[in-house]
Image (cartoon, rainbow, N blue to C red; front, side):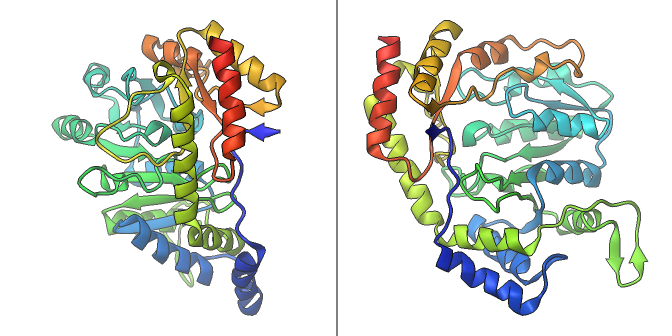
Length: 357
């Protein structure tokens, strides 16, 4: 079986080195030693000012919404994993969809302003497949209308613009997912990133029940701290991150050599490719499903990321984004992970090419 993704498991001896520290300290959670070490290492690696680790990426978004004081409506993309939308709805915030750009698959800045109302409090773009949004144009719109900007950067680990600046440094906040399917993972986990240290301080209070001192609770909070075993996995994976990213680049290059250019998404030239996913776009849904079924018949599991378009969900009201719906019907993500062999890539490409020939 070849799945669309496969979790990178570091060498046991490397992971055990960190787990031994947990047994020595007997400190399993509540901002433990390994959580603190991982925080500092990720801050340096990602070149960000402030980072707060959480138990998962969805709660990272919800805490960020709360700390930013978001209410009413938030303009977002219909082409993303469902958590982008459901996290808003869970916080009683209405997701308002603006359509996507057909080249980048990201929220189209030209579609945003028509969706702004007196109830709009923020813009929530997603760096889809790790492809950088037009952060400057989005910020201009936000500044013009006095809106917050929070980026769902679940796919965008270590994406840097051509000027070398990490994409996580834009907007009022960015959130990451460290789920086991991601380039970098802590089994389950996430992070909130911001230039504003006071904002991160508020988020840290919120993820720990509102507790700010030994006998002090300030306001409501929840519990989404990262535990030490998750941090141990993260540290061991981070030790291997250069290898992981290099191998994913190898897989990406192998696909590009073997697949026809007309099904490959156009390159985004404003930032590097972190090889988070390998999407291919077919001429219509019939061809997409034909390829998918051929792969499944050979025990290869692609995924229709991201189908269905989120503007079709029953809890978002009547909204219509034709470009997102069209792309969602025609796109397929092929297997992408560091241990995928060139032989397996050849098999996948032969099946794809044979199905569209």
